[in-house]
Length: 248
Image (tube, rainbow, N blue to C red; front, side):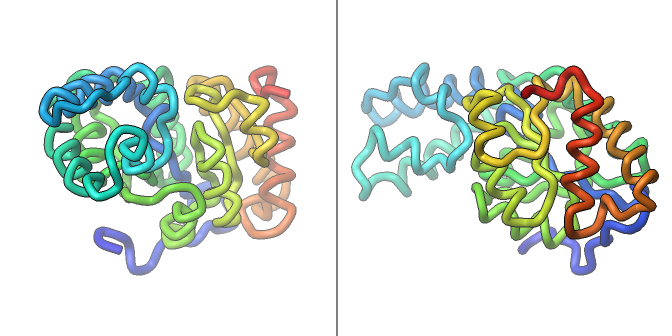
């Protein structure tokens, strides 16, 4: 995979080796205004009705899944390419960071860890968002959705994956990583927990405090919370149980 490290840093016996993955849309950024603007321009360019207000309520899956609601199958690739070409002009400046996004990434770095972004979005556009908002990731990997995200998470040795969608939960579980879910996207807390999230937080503003507690649990477990087995989920639950922001 282009741009990926050949020898990812393994998760070791302290949080200094911790790699945390983050989803992008509705996890780090509120992409609804930008995506709505891009869909509206796409509709104008193609002469096809697109209910942009409806489309932005189901963000998460790859673009092609949404386009299939509005275009015949034989046009999806062409229209998808057009949308991605329009995206930088119409979506980047209109998209803000979600509350706590910068602080969440900084919290990982503050522990000596690495923060990567693993997203279903077109990778060049994902990088434009982060650059525009001043969010620095150690790596950005695009074009991966749901269980396919496990490819990048395993490659980079990610022990934790943070996302807003049940597809993100599935990706984390497929990679053997802790699933930390934030209820800022189309899936509510109950859906995220039912999908198997280890921890559910209301938003990323709660993440630094959770990560600090998790780091303490790692230390108390002699580092085993960052390794395979029951340690990761146990540490995550212990950290979550200590927090009023962990949603039951």
